[in-house]
Image (cartoon, rainbow, N blue to C red; front, side, top):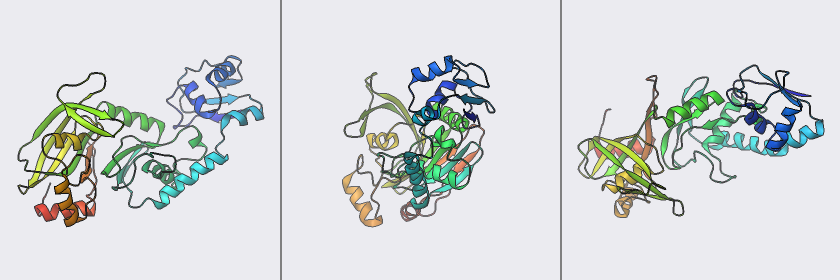
Length: 330
């Protein structure tokens, strides 16, 4: 017999979804058959699979050891060890990631530019692996728990965008934060330097179309309902020298490349942005400041309870801002 006591990282999901994680190599039909035959029980009783798990529930399986080994993908196996090594390597090697806020359910990280939020291919180290490595190192999660729940980032930033990333430490925390982001209850503010002079608050509305082949987006006023997403971006100037403007940008929606493409569409592309920017300006900025990517920083988030988290500027952003605008206070 195998037995698992449901903890906070397994609670809050249906029994059948949990079983798919606990026995990842088993088919759905096999799992439901085992439930019907009481070879898998919940709190010693027959279950259907649709029951919502709570902390303290006990799931028991009466499978033969060889059957359990076949279907379980036990955390000690070779594949899991490779994954564990990835978490440890990411935590050890990804430099300058800092924790700005942490509680029992979530944490907020400050991601440097140049680091992926989530891996693009299996061999990539990313912030997501750093997060799990950090939690393993602190004893906040165990290898056994990783078999049925993996902490994860809840919002994504482009590789070369720096700043705030919210992460769920527990299943409940991940679900709660993801729902807050989905309903736009979390306010997200970015700082950037754009080309041109902006002196007044601008509210930008439009529709975003993504070309998956080129990984570029375009902004339009005449959308294709089947493929285009409505977007809204609010821009507030903080300082300007006539040629460039330091902006605070609030994302009302959060779509791929939204800030970069939306500002470019009104003639104010971000400095350093080789996908949507102006090559001549980018070349000038690169020669002056050695900036090789878009200057965009996820600066501030405000949670529904009013809690605010601010990510300090990266040193290069600070140097460019001070050179172009002098001392600026917010």
